[in-house]
Length: 240
Ligand SMILES: [Zn+2]
Image (cartoon, rainbow, N blue to C red; front, top):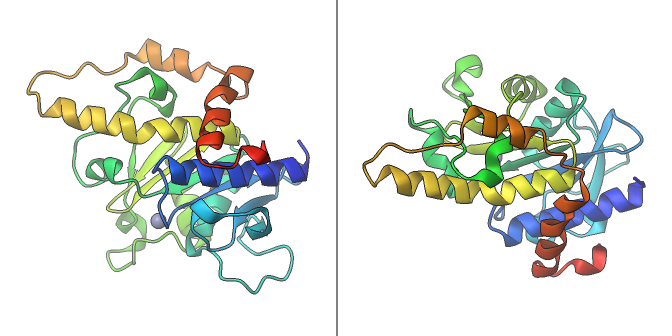
């Protein structure tokens, strides 16, 4: 894929995730450089719903802009670099704070897939607690490469990890797969929370069903169906 196409897709991903209420004014999504695996693209510090191509910045994995950059940058960009450095097969990373997932970051109730569309997120989603390694006096933000690497180590083989009292990260082999899963993550959390109030045992996806979802190819043409629709809904179909 060309660099130009990659940057347009990253703008589309920002707009979709904002329009679908996965990202609000905060949170961010990145993509690995298609020709330089030791670099990635991420917007400058900017609300995802208004990101344009000119906002995209190229970074080395340790979070340094490749070209001189005077605009403010996301403080938490190191969670992206940490993920790309740790996992060669990860090519797209999302960090968000969607409310629907937050209860699972502060309780012992595990986040797990209960609807088919998120079966590929993994069977039991881990909660990364920044205090475990970095003490109980941090601001909870992933602001160093050490923190980004530590978080990255707890994600795979799942595609999602929760951050205690903060939010979540999601990864995939490409942006389209990442966005598709992310759009359904808050819905799955809402369904799971609603089901817990009904007072009966909850039937989550079975291990074989999760494995089957993980075998689906995020790069397959059918994955573009949601991407194209959500891009139009978020007003950026001109970038497709
Ligand atoms: Zn955050």
